[in-house]
Length: 375
Image (cartoon, rainbow, N blue to C red; front, side):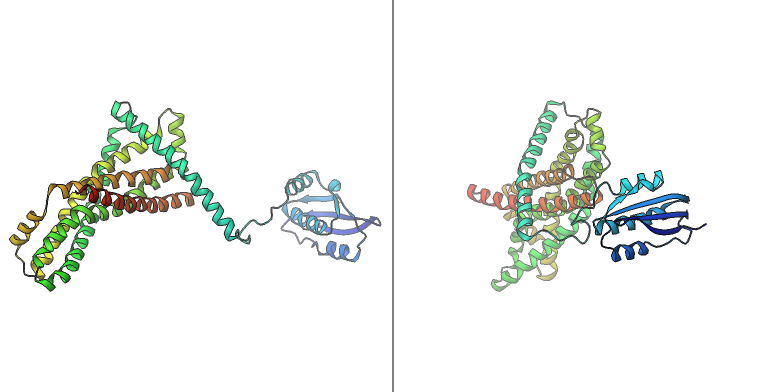
């Protein structure tokens, strides 16, 4: 027999809901609208009880009906007595109503006010400083253990990371450096052509690529390529609880994961900067020879006369500093990553932004420093 519903008044203020038959989802079940109409017509109802002794079988169909009745009773501030329900249904409804739904949750919640968002962002930035200093201290201690020969890392991992950040980065570094060299050569040639001094394209390109642009563009490339990869790798390991497993097994994750990545990028960045400078100078020569009728020998001689070892060392030092900052930013954001896919994406984005910000600040400070030192 399908589920049946009848309403009785046990007392003037006590409405009893009598349930009988089979209350299964596959059956044609009564609606809770009859209960709603009765409650609307009788404002003196203060108690709602059930009589379910005649229920033969039930499933979630009964629970859906009861949830609607409970909701109607809550809206009318009516006390519900579940004593007449089957034991299983009574326990389920007790669990369902144990914790009231939280307000302002879900997609319809209003965003916090502007001042509150500014305050939360300010507090987050204030807390980020000590976290960064703590990570810097751990990395410094790890390098100290490296120099003492007690650091816990695998040399095979270091070689694989060196291959990834070095040899595998050559194609993109070559392309960007060549294009930057072309741009610098054309920009300088437009002004130098007014004085018939196109030969000084060699000076402009060689000094610009070796001292500034080679290191800067390589740093930006590596921040977007390698810094983001470091953050994503370490962030994924945080999600999979692999870093926790390292700590449980007695391995220092800074030594085992962060140290090889920082060491690889610090070693490879100077070489990539030198390579970028050579490619940029070659691009300048291509423009000078093909567009401004300067011979290859003349361009080479002018480049050699304008170059000095100090310019090369300035670029190498800047590249080393940029590599250290990129690796630090990528590993920092990876180790700070939360334990969700969204957190990994945010950590990767933050690593790129932080790395480029560090590069720009370091480039400004180093340029001023070398200028004051006369180098």
